[in-house]
Each structure stands twice: as structure tokens, then as C-alpha cells.
Length: 153
Image 1 (tube, rainbow, N blue to C red):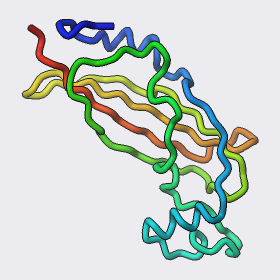
Image 2: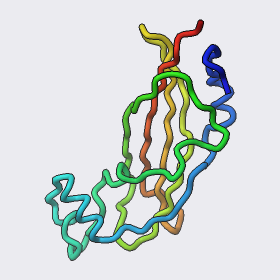
Image 3: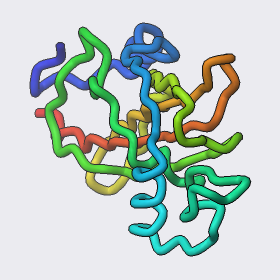
């Protein structure tokens, strides 16, 4: 773990942590949960709000409501600097349906840096994937976190 006076070795973090699943669980969405989510988002299409609709399914953004049980892999260093939310992107592939088990897995998808006027910023992108029982990808959601490092002394 770096001290406050050491820069984080991003290349070493990438080598050790990228693309290794560190969080995994199964969930099953209920029709009530799907309707509640859809209506809270302002959705009005019947295929998202009426469980009796022939193509009833979760709204495409439902993945943004899922949370990992663990935020970072075991052994991931703590950071010295200001941490901020840097956004979320959801990519649906196939519909999620009520009553169908979904495997949710999270891995560190990317680690990269940018340098601005205030110094170096390190971006961490966690990717959650959603698959059905046959292993078919239903979609993914990327969550980005940025740490602005404290200036080196």
C-alpha cells in the first residue's frame, strides 16, 4: 500500500486486479419489483409496467439499481486523495424477466489515469455482468470512481 508520499503504481494494479471476478451472487426479480422500478423511472410502456403483458420485462436500465456486495477485490489498496463518483453506464443485451434467476458478477474492468490542472487522477471501472442460468449475457453496468491524488511532497 502506498504512503501519502508515494504515487500509486497503476500498471501493477492492472496486472494484479483486472478481469478477476471478486463479487458474485444470484438474484431473482419479482414482477412487483420490476413494476415499481419502471414506474419510479416514469416508464409508461405496458411491457414494463403490466405483468400480464405478453413481453413483460425489466426496463433496460434496471442494472443501474444493482449493487455489488463487495466494492473492491480483496487486497486492493486504500487511496490517499479525494474520491468521487465518475458515472455509471448500463448496456442491456437481452431482456431481464421476472422469476428468472440472474447471476451478477463484478470485476475490475479498467484502471487508467488522466492528468489535469490539479494533478493526476486515477479512474477505476468496475463492471457488473448479468447472465441467465444458461450463461447468456443479459447486460452489464460499469461504475467509475475517480481518485484525485494528493500532490507529491
